[in-house]
Image 1 (cartoon, helix red, strand yellow):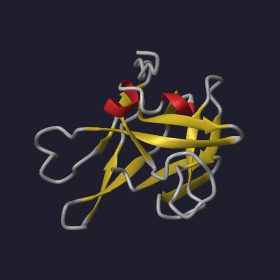
Image 2: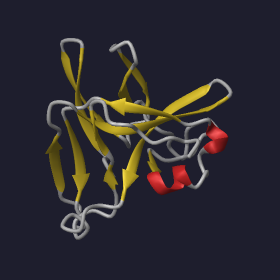
Image 3: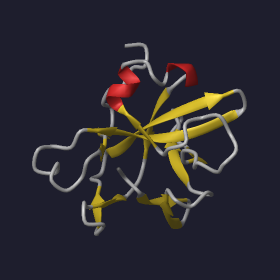
Length: 146
């Protein structure tokens, strides 16, 4: 489900893991700048947004995220981390022009970003139950309006 990421922010290369309550993800803005935003919400954190770091694509299309005014975004990372069914860590590099699909959710003044997940390809299904949705530069992202 993408439990960790490596990304560049300015001159620094940063590593973030979802369990860290201070975890942030980079968001690619329309003007090309990068903004860091809180990565989901943990059970013990204040807030009313979903206590998770992920949003399933089929749940977005079925309207379960509508009450949080979902905005599709691209998350520019160098690589992401998945754990296999036995708990072993694996890192996957993204190619130039590839992004992880994200969703910004909001509830009043609370804003957080969630990694959009999909069912894995058949060969990856034996290793991972969910997979981050990877999109190309210029590719249409999900449309929360259908």
